[in-house]
Amino acid sequence: MVRDIFSLQTNLTTTERAVSVALGLGLAAVAAQPRPNKLLSLAALIAGAALAIRGASGHCSMKSAIQRI
Image (cartoon, rainbow, N blue to C red; front, side, top):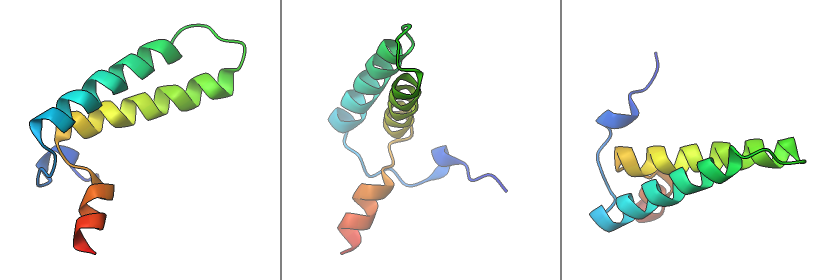
């Protein structure tokens, strides 16, 4: 039922993966700080988590779709 994101074919280089993880964790850490705008913090937290997962899995759906064109 749930798709295993870590079983997908990797299409990111080691550098892209490292940058994604670093930026994602940094963005999530900044978003975790108390802010007046809770919605913006939530959006930043979700974006940071998505970047970190992208780097950890090594697969980017957007890059895969662009390469098919």
